[in-house]
Length: 145
Ligand code: THU
Figure 1 (tube, rainbow, N blue to C red):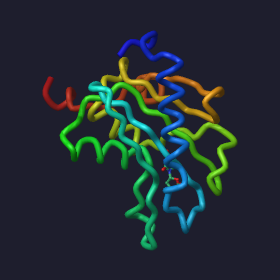
Figure 2 (figure 1 turned 180 degrees about the horizontal axis):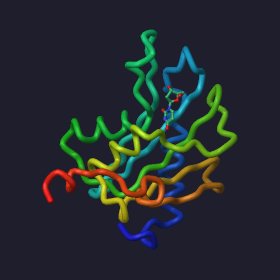
Figure 3 (figure 1 turned 135 degrees about the vertical axis):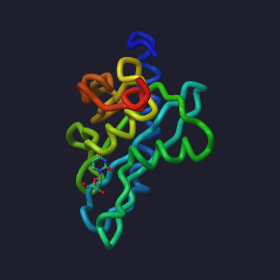
Figure 4 (figure 1 turned 45 degrees about the vertical axis):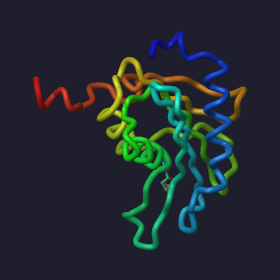
């Protein structure tokens, strides 16, 4: 999508869905809860939360949970993702996606036409293109060109 197509209404709705998902974050180890709401090109929204594990490394971030839910249901074309998070589920500052999640975004999304919405609330958010948060990213194109 184009940045101007990402309306305030769309952003607020995605942020609300992410906020609603935050309580489901399974975080007995870090107590840092993250949730995401991923907007597919067909208008469907896939939510996700982080899911931790006693062995630590199997932990899945909120963003990847949302992507993997969508892809596993046959949906792999996306427009935007909203992310909220904070210690004990208190959203006090912007929660930026980790490098691994940025790379997963790169697998399925156009860097110039996929947008990451970092939110503290429905009134306080910032929008970045994937290209802005992952410059010079490696994508499936690099394997085929
Ligand atoms: N986490 C996410 O879910 N998404 C991010 O973008 C950053 C980190 C999770 C992983 C772990 O469960 C907790 O936050 C602390 O790193």
